[in-house]
Length: 255
Image 1 (tube, rainbow, N blue to C red):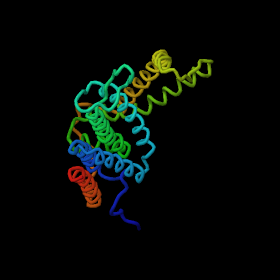
Image 2 (image 1 turned 180 degrees about the vertical axis):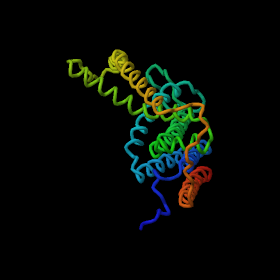
Image 3 (image 1 turned 180 degrees about the horizontal axis):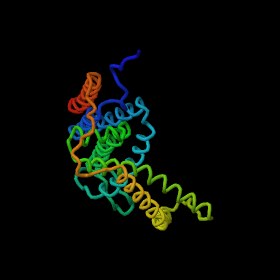
Image 4 (image 1 turned 90 degrees about the vertical axis):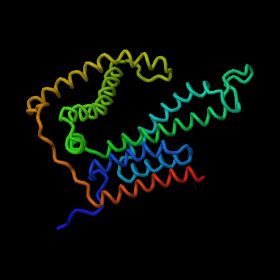
């Protein structure tokens, strides 16, 4: 008979260990100002996602964060006038000066945002809803209503994307052109399609609330879910994760 493995798959690890690892990534991203160290943290997160089979979700998150970071940089880089001017957005008019301090500050802010925020969906993609409930209500002893709200919100993230694709496919089948390269027209198209999307999601929320009520959920209940214990193997992986994060921070101060 095969026993429980010493080193468990990240999806089977105790949620508390994964939560602490996530906090470690967030803390390490803000304990160093070296761009190479923060980029190394992002690479480590990618390797963890690849090794645990969650790279697709991490890749989508990374693309979204890169787009957000680029948008944030475009708004901020022209407001920093400290340092030496590297170039102008409009060279012949010498308008929109971009300095070396501005570039460095925007790069630091962007990498920190990607490294810290990217660790959250990575942890959630490796944590089942049962483990989330165990962590929130079992380990942290929060009321069960908070667990239901959190799990419901996490559940509706992929559901919202699926509903959006269904609405786009339905409109395309009726002859509406949903493919466009014009960003302004894209925004207008999304606004027009938001009403059927909201109606569909509201119907799902109503169905889910009835389902929860019929299963006897009581927000005043004091019953607690089973706590998933942290094993020795989880501590070994967590220690290895902390050591890697600390090495990245120390390397940033030395280099």
